[in-house]
Length: 465
Ligand SMILES: *Cc1c(COP(=O)(O)O)cnc(C)c1O
Image 1 (cartoon, rainbow, N blue to C red):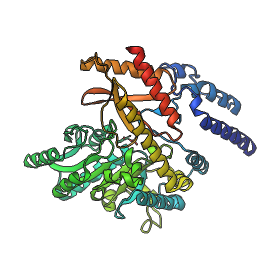
Image 2 (cartoon, rainbow, N blue to C red):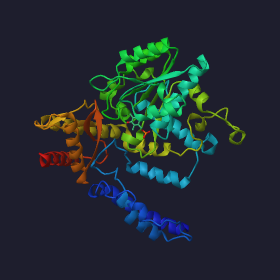
Image 3 (cartoon, helix red, strand yellow):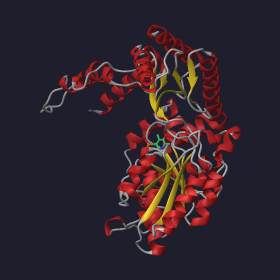
Image 4 (cartoon, rainbow, N blue to C red):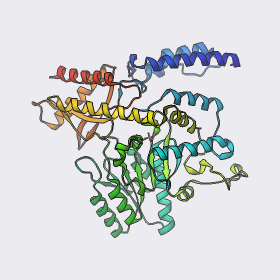
């Protein structure tokens, strides 16, 4: 591709991107592709000679886009959002263009130092103490794995190689169980702490389990608490858990992958009370803070503990600056690193704290309004509290009282809602019962999109009765 061809195609793509974002809501939000359809539409062997860009782009539009799920659609109410805002997308274009591999300070000084600055900006915006130092990880799963490995190393350094125990509630994200396994602790090192009626961890049960482990010769190593669990956005009581962690020398990791963005709002700060006691904290700007995937903010108090767990310096990576600079390759699992701070910087500067807070408030208000609609509608019921942008509910006709039948009824209901392909919702189970999740947080979602979803939900319920 010549420089002139690159320029022409790039302009063409930017036009496509602008149209895509402006008209995202007009597309079917999900694909109707069956397993294998997309693959079958593509050649099984690679091209021997280069193909014209026009043909590649035509196939992108005709074969690939129809097989996509459109996360950037304003009818997105599934899982949690994964927002790609315009400033973030523009920064990603620059990142790809420069193609820097930011493993060490000297492999791009600006990448390292901009990461330090943006992580500190986010720390201030989130009300975190200045004893926390941040680093961008690819995902919350990686951050939690790093936290558990750091905890393991700290305990092993202090007390030898006794069997370890890691504690998290039954509502903790699956990345915790995965991290315990990947850290080599054995799946049975995970202790599942029971939750209360609001799906939050019961601290008294945690304390009893820690004491029982000690008595049995197992070393309690780490507790993972959540602010905003994945199923229902439950908030574990950080103050009480932090006190238990302190009394028992546990590494205290807080996973707020989705809800951490809400710490930008003073009125949501009470959910994070006790976070100042944590050893590590993760939240994902790539979920609810307008920064496209991937960008996960990981904060630690004890940086040397993180470095002891992750740093390694073979001769071929040594530089003259190592003693005076941050080499982020030592702050996580991977060696090679993308320049993720650039998009975060574009986002924080484009929206400002005010713009970010306004978006978060809008989503929380829309969720509160939706909650009111569900509560006021005969035959519907709420399934959990909604401290942030997620509402869990189900349809419960008066004539239907068998639990399993209700589950099947709601599963069919969700299928009919999503068959519209105008909105997309997903489900979970809470206390063993099927619940529909309405996660409001896509950046282009307005009151009208929520109203459309509610119409489709009620319509689907009527069709079934
Ligand atoms: C989404 C989520 C995760 C996983 O996030 P990734 O960045 O995809 O690894 C972890 N914990 C919670 C509470 C989540 O909601």
